[in-house]
Image (cartoon, rainbow, N blue to C red; front, side, top):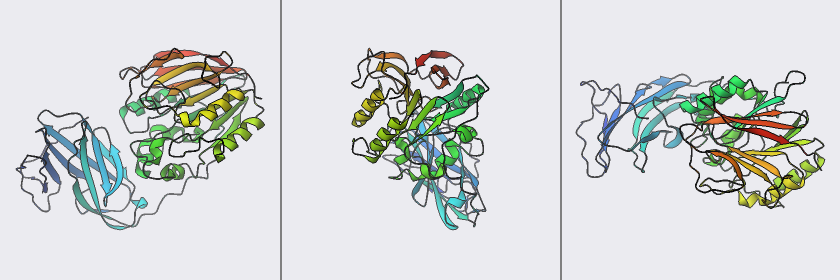
Length: 425
C-alpha cells in the first residue's frame, strides 16, 4: 500500500515533526512548492509525507485533485492509509496508493481553509498532520439527486429471470472494489442491492469518491440500485446524513415489488436501535409483511442475525427474525461480516428447518476480508480467504424461487443452489 516519494535535493521539508525518541534532520523552508514532513515512529522507522496537489496556497475554483505521497525507510508495519481533514474536520481516508481523491469544494464555504493529511500504520502509529493552506473560490453545486424512490430495475426479457446482484462492505476506493464492480457489470443485472458500509466513515467525500459518481465504482449501477444502510454510515452523523443525502432523502426502511417478489430493506444497525417490537420500524415491518401478497419475499439489511464472524450478530433484532419465519420470508441478505456465509434454512428459533428462512451474508464487495472465528453445523457454505473470496452474490429470481451463485473476482463460482418460495401469510 505504500508508494516511495522521490524528493529533489533542492526541496526540503516545510514542516519537521519529531515523534517519540526520534529527531528529524530536515529544516523547513517557507514557500516550498511541495510541502513535506518527516517523522520517526517509536519503532524507529522514518516516514516522509508530501502533499503534491493542490499547490500550497492555491485558489481552487471547483472540484480539485488532492494527492499525497508516502515514503517509508526502515522496517515498518503496513501502511493503512492517508487520512485527510479540512480545518481539523474529517474528510476522507484513502487506504491505497496512489493516495488521491477529488475534493468537492462546493461542499464547503468559500474562502481560506487548511487541508491536512496524516499517515496511519497497522499497530496504531499515525504521523502528525501535514497542513496545506488553500483557498476555495465560490463554486456552484451540481443539482441534487432526485428524491429517492425504490428502483424497479430494468425489465428482464420475456420469460427470463430477474438478475439481481448483491454485496456489501465494498465502497472504499480499493482495486478490489473496482474488480467487484466489473464482475457485477459482466452479469448485466436488472437490479443491484448494496448491503451497506461506505468506508471509512461514510463522509460526503467518501460517498462521492468511493461509492462513486458519474459512473465510477458502484455508481455505475445507481439507476438500478436499492441500498441498505450500514453502521459506518453513522460514524460522522447520528442520522447517517451523508448517506441519506447521497441517495436523495432515502428512508431507513422501505419496500417494493418486482414481479413475483416482495423486497424489504431494513436498518438493523445498533446506532438505529429499533429492535424492540414497539419500535416504529418493527410495527411498520409487521404491517408490511401482513399486507404482502407476493409468493416470494426477500429482506435485506446490514448486520446478519447469524454469523461466524468476530463481530457479534444482531441479536437485539431477534424479534425480526421470528417475524420473517412467521411470514415465510424466502431469503435474507446482509453484509457487515467481511466474508461469505450461507446458512441452512432456519426457523424462528434458529433451528434448521426445511420450511425455514435461508440467510446469506455477502460482505465481500471490495474491503478487506475477515476470517471466521468459530464454526456452526447450521452453515451450508462459507468462504473467508483473502486471496479468493472477494466477489458478489448473483440471484436469478423467478416466480417460484431463487437460483443463487457466489462468484469471486477471478470468475470462480464458489457456491450455488436454489431456494424455493413458500408464499406469504
